[in-house]
Image 1 (cartoon, one colour):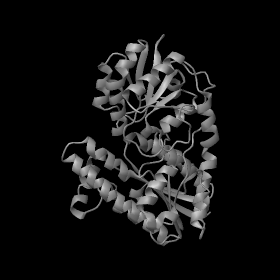
Image 2: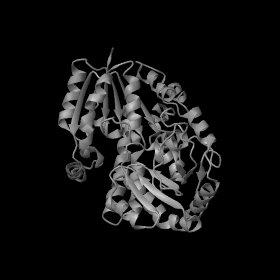
Image 3: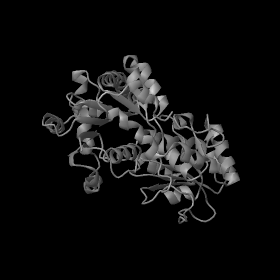
Image 4: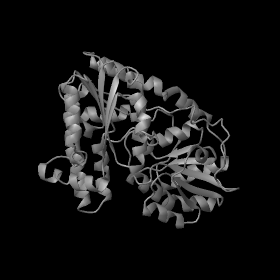
Amino acid sequence: MEGLLFLAHRIPFPPNKGDKIRSFHLLRHLSKRYAIHLGAFVDDPEDWQYGEALKPYCASIKLLPLHPRRARLASLTGLLTGDALTLPYYRSRELGRWAAGLAADGTVTRGLAFSSAMTQFMPASLARRVLDMVDVDSDKWTQYAPTQRWPMSWVYAREGRKLAEWEARVAAEFDATLLVSQDEAALLQRRAPAARHKIGAFENGVDAEYFSPARDYPNPYPPAVQGVVFTGAMDYWPNVDAVSWFAERIFPALRAAVPAAQFTIVGSRPTDAVLALARQPGVVVAGSVPDVRPWLAHAACAVAPLRIARGVQNKVLEAMAMARPVVATPQAAEGIRAVAGRDFQLAQDEAGFARSVIAQLQTRGSNAAARDCILTHYDWTRNVSAVDVLFETAPAVAPVLETCPA
């Protein structure tokens, strides 16, 4: 088997959050055709134990520690060099030397960079280099900027500009660049018109057998409670903003109309701001749970009140796979191939969000159409196979990318 260098900004296991779900399925798929040499950072001490779980998919593994606090300090060097702060955040001479050595001795002939930051380690000598950018992260920083006070508003706006420059540059340099949705791909094409023919998308998937509503899950909610649930990593700022906005601005009116309503926040590492929401009547912070499926299965409604988002929200796809009614903002629904009003409910503002959730609580039903949508459009095996031809020596890139799910 030919060698393929797979570089990821975070260890692709366990597949329990958005980027790790996508990177793991991509890694597993490519391991069927290539001898994978994985280089990745570990930013959570709990994740060191999962190196063994990746061995069946890899010929070699290089894991490096990333301490977020130190990395944030290191990222400030970008202010002196003119780089996007994201690049020195992940900078590692050790990883660069390891990758260069594998390319120099012919161990690897192809490469996959997972996220734009990892392109800085990808040897230029490889026969084919593919970037899975996932999201146009620069736009997320641009969205952050107006929500912050100076000087952070300036820092975030600068990061949006600088990272956009880097994204356009690497899209031009790599043989193909993939994103999580056609919406994301179109945004990058507008920003990097010279590389337009090399930019496409492959969509995420959902393990529909795992996220099945047909199983009998224990009910984690108290008797007579009508559960409204949000799932996601609770140290991620857009998620923190989403649950804070929902709990403080939407949930009070909702609970006044439906006193049995309980808003439950499920996700690892809740920040102090998230924990403080539990002081509000009817709000519960469950934190990390061993299995999110019971919380979805017995919820009357899942909510995705994100005001800042990029890409496709796996939390929405998983709730749909469980045939749960979902109410989402336009930002949370962007890029999802589903029909608003049938597969999920779209809420444009606070009042509309409250009305939509109240309607779901009063109906207290499931949504078979949502699961049908997942089965139709979000099969991992089918979606990820679109990347295979991109690693061939000289594919016609534009037609190849057009065959990706659209």
